[in-house]
Amino acid sequence: METNFEIEDNYAIRINGRLIDLHNNFDFIGLTDNLENNSIQLTFSKSSGNWVQKNEYSEITFILSNLTYKHFIEADSVEFPEDARCLSDISFFPSDLREINDSITDQRKPNENDDLLFLFQDGKVIRVNCKKTEALIKE
Image (cartoon, rainbow, N blue to C red; front, side, top):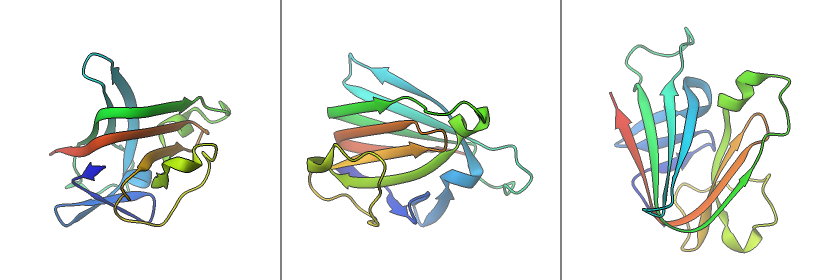
């Protein structure tokens, strides 16, 4: 998988030398599954929390192209609705361990056949294997 970012501490990405804290500073807005283009788009928007710096990016969109695998697990908790918007972890994970969807690895860049896992506070999982993942930033 080709990426334009690195994963740091499993809750943030580093792109263009800048650390982007997806867990604390961004809310998950939604997923667009584009069957026609064989791609998925995940969008995160800047949180309105008073702890978020004013110069934080307004939006991060992940474009996952040329999909070879996708697996979605629905949320297991609705006790706290805000958990649906909160990313718990982001991780590259070996594709030969697809029966495991609740673990992470500590690696910045993907190995050749790794999947990309997005784990959310409410238990939702988005697991994808693709040729290219690009993080697009909106000021």
